[in-house]
Length: 379
Ligand SMILES: [Zn+2]
Picture 1 (cartoon, rainbow, N blue to C red):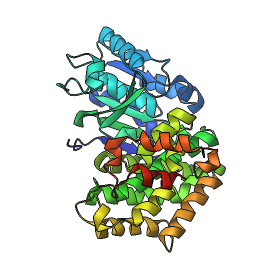
Picture 2: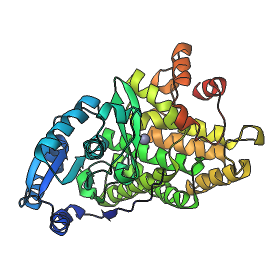
Picture 3: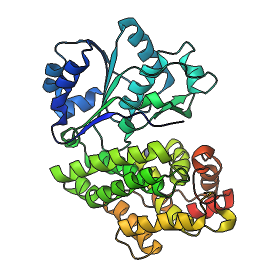
Picture 4: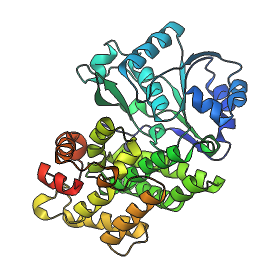
């Protein structure tokens, strides 16, 4: 599927002040506003949002659970249709942005949301015009053509070229009030997405350029943005997460993401932390790719060259040194650098994680895995 749609991005301090002029330029008056109310209150931007939207009729969609669930998506679709909106604005973290994307797409299909999300029905129409305003520096969802949805406890990824929001307003001021734990977990997601994108089978010259820049920003700014945030480090992490979003929009993610879903659902570990728990080990594993187990058609040398770029971008002298640096960073911001550090050591638990990997994500990993090789990596 082509991720080619271009969106208009404003990424800078005070970018939110552009919302009013974007609305004037679009000349849309009926706004469906998917909003994380906690994020609005803590951002201190309530008044600016009110002023920006004062000439529009607004239907606020609030009160949704973390991680988009089918019942929230269906509730949103009903509210959206009842209001007959022509523009969606999503304000919040990855959940709010993904909900905005899904409601704007699924409300326009003739088939029920459930059957489109689970892949039983095709997507027939493009998504509604959308402005995404992320309040975390993490998922980069404002730059991708996919959205996550949960149906009966199972995770699905809905993909369509029109899911890339038409406008993205990425304002680091919106992240200033995030507590350290959220900054760490979301920032690790961006960092992992960037590193995984570098070695992904789906990587291209373009995605590699985005990913490399994203790693550089995250490497420079993640620790500071958690431990003693400055405007510069908050801006740096917004750049990291947006660029990592642009990178995985092309390349998709790999083994650490494939392994993370069971770690999150079984052990209640936040997504970004769960992903980072295996990142160093997967770097090590992928660096030993051989002709016999290389999944990337460009061959093991090509994969190794890209891994070497990761090593260099981290300022490391070897793969082992890069792994150490990654694990030290994860530790320094108060997160688990391995499963054992989180107390997940029982063989049955490791078996469960290794056997419930997302096979689509895993097939994008450059080195072939087996349950046995995954278990070794997890121990
Ligand atoms: Zn992620």
